[in-house]
Image (cartoon, rainbow, N blue to C red; front, side, top):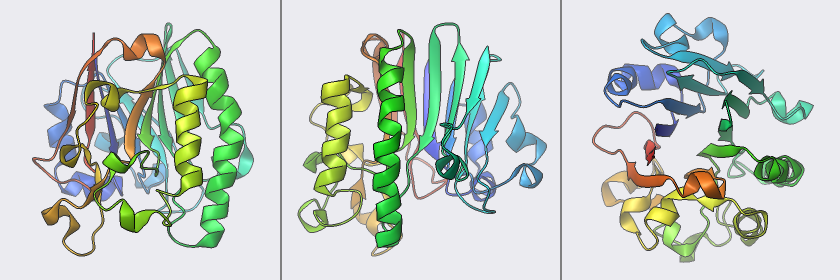
Length: 256
């Protein structure tokens, strides 16, 4: 089973950069999308359901903003849109598909980098979704949460960790929250399970400033985080950088 997660920074932009041609060659079973920046009326037939895939989306109310989606080769047994928390769900940040005992989630946590107000909202979201993440971990299902978490967990997860300790995405409170999710709640960071010490090649996002991509001054903020039994089945994880569809790179994980 191959699962891909990709923040597209606009599905229409990614389409123009060849994302859908690439997708057809990936042999992926499930593709989780974040930051599609579109509503249903903006979507082409290919965007709604690429050849060979079913498509499901949770759009943001605000036009050209946020939004998540999932493509899957097999029609799911159930689809869940949103957390059931109104102000979070208006931003289109969560969709889950279920196949038998397996759940695959596409998640887009807020960024706090635009200012204090959004950082306060980010902390609020983190606090309010924790019970949901705890329940998912304990419901007996195999679950993988794919997405842009907007948090670099450890110093090895970003190039310039010393200069970013007071910046959103690497704040102590954010890192502690993610650590709590992994340590106390019991979720597994699949990439780190397979690449325990990898540094420069682990990044999935690069700022558009200062030639960050060319210099590989990146951050690892896109994750597949799985329940323990599913995480044990992961045997290969790669970050696709041969083409650029976005300021993020797709994260690919193969499971037995």
